[in-house]
Image (cartoon, rainbow, N blue to C red; front, side):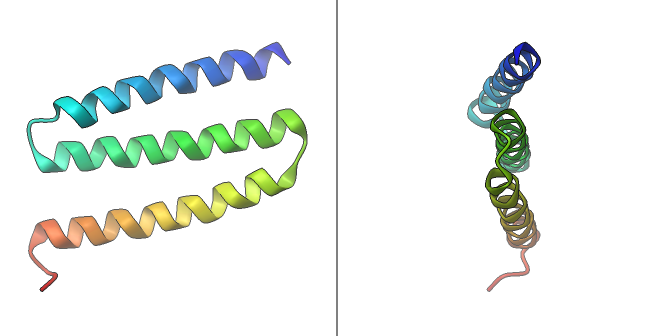
Length: 85
């Protein structure tokens, strides 16, 4: 159980660094990368939670969240490129 605790602490520290990039990012693409990284860390946290409590529903939710995050990143990238009207 201590391995899950240490992994969660590392994911939390990485999340704080990602939030720092989100706040301090000088350009919009830097902020988008920060949000995307934070979404990836949320998915990793859900997978850790599902593995720690032996519940597959958390992993299923993490998969759906990852897919929605990916689609959101594509939409933001398309918008920044100037493709959305």
